[in-house]
Amino acid sequence: MGGTAAFWVGTFVTLEEAMDTFRGGYRRRDFLSTVMAALATSGAFSLWNRFPLPTAARTAKMALKIGLVYGLAQDMLSLSRGRSLAYVDLLLGKI
Image (tube, rainbow, N blue to C red; front, side, top):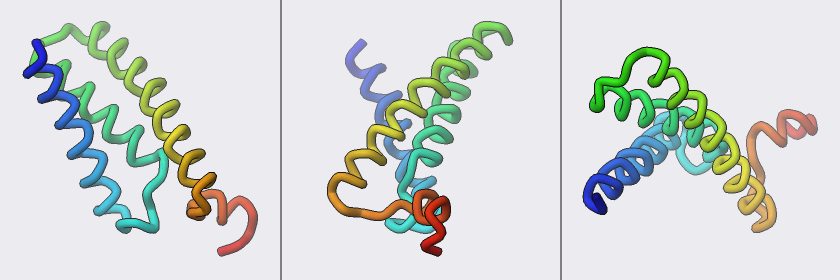
């Protein structure tokens, strides 16, 4: 069971890093990459387990919520460390 959990966590972390890199590297590390990685991982998990569509949709909805909370928590930690976020700069008119 631990190996299975490690596989899915590794998948999520790898996808999040890949999306951060694809979206612009260090400058674009924000909650959107986390949400996209969570949704992609939940989709792969649903396909792997051959979930019916309603179960897959419920899994995706949970992944969206968890990815959003986790991503925003990462962003708050980044802001507390003094790193600017592109979407915050955009909202504040600094770009």
